[in-house]
Length: 597
Ligand SMILES: Nc1ncnc2c1ncn2[C@@H]1O[C@H](COP(=O)(O)OP(=O)(O)OP(=O)(O)O)[C@@H](O)[C@H]1O
Ligand SMILES: CC(=O)C(=O)O
Ligand SMILES: [K+]
Ligand SMILES: [Mg+2]
Image (cartoon, rainbow, N blue to C red; front, side, top):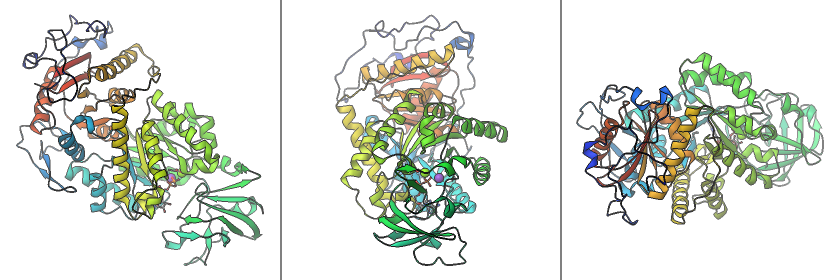
């Protein structure tokens, strides 16, 4: 078997950890799968070491084995479930070692075992109904991995307050919720509805779209538009689409700065919704083409995001790879050593034209179906979604499927069957993450909507595993160097081994998170425990499929790391003796197969 897996016991391999060699490589009897043993006497193998000096496992000298808690205090704390929705922080007896894990994941691991942890990650847009500390905590308990703030709405002070609360939640309660800041972009949009949270446009009503500045209250059925040239640019007969067609108007008359429009498709108008206009079946986009992807306001917001240390910047209406490259160099110059990930929002015709190069230049992508559906015919949105999801996986970039997943839940406590089917499809496509927009920002049932995403994800993922649906996706090399190739081969082989051997988990020790993302890309059947030494990497890994990110100080000595990890996880009942684990690290070119002692 060792040979068929192209594995060799290597002369450079360290001797098997004594404490582990006593244990057979068998599945625990409690496992539902057949028990089997590997016909070998070693429980550690090594892929043949490369001659490259920086790849020689022996060249990596062992460093300190002391594991230090990040905040230096209350290290090794644990969380106990006190009820379905609240968890209490329980400081553990500190021995200078600690491991940080998301409390919700911890509860999931304890209650349902490794195999049933959720693989699909969840992003929640934070708005007026979810910006309170308790509401944010409820979302974290409900499985929110990333909190998104949309710079289209709210003041900078408001956003700062939300960021501060999410931070506090992470620090005080042990979560690793990442923060994603979404830029406004310079597309045409409506004003803020004079303070109302929404307005209903009914069939046959006449509404006025105007660039005029109104003093305090907006006249009835009047909408502000954010760009001066609006009245000149539209023509009588044009179709005006709000939020990608959520509401549709026909332009019937122009009176100076006012444009009178007849509602032809009724619906809910939301503050600052995007506007597009169509003429003879085509999107009128000359104006948009001239607008910069990143406006001067966006640059100020980006500066704000950098100084607040957000984890992700989602860039609206990306047109080309150049804008992403430019932004990356800007961020690199502004914030030395900072590692903000750039997510390209795929929501315009231009982004589809330059799709691959945009994704290559970015750290991830979002299928922003709201605006996308305003720029391409709606029936094309599903195939574009699938294309972007697959391309991202090939290129090893996390991908988020966003907008209208559970739109009806803005108003109603249960989703439609069609919405559940849509969520299922995104999970089945194995997108890294699903996103709530209005449902969590201003809807009546934000926590219920999150619960629906969570339960549908779990159900579809389980169905997929039960049916043993391993889709064969070509995963081309993404790196350029020989050492990149080795890393990728190790990850691909590890994922394959994990499926074939039906192991309980993959452990990956990774400094930058890169190796964890390569494993995530393979979408293995078992969860991937990603150990990383910085909280920022841990938060960013929270966006990626199947990763359970832990913060742990580790050394170059894998034997020591594993023993420490087993000890710490066992102390918290997160793993048990006999669990079968594959372990890899970006410091040592080996795949280790072992039972938890
Ligand atoms: N910070 C906020 N303050 C007030 N309302 C908000 C806020 N964030 C979101 N909303 C409300 O939630 C709705 C949906 O929010 P969201 O930001 O997800 O819109 P979107 O269409 O997905 O994003 P984008 O504007 O990037 O296309 C908004 O139309 C707005 O009514
Ligand atoms: C999320 C977003 O920006 C959109 O769907 O348009
Ligand atoms: K936005
Ligand atoms: Mg958008």
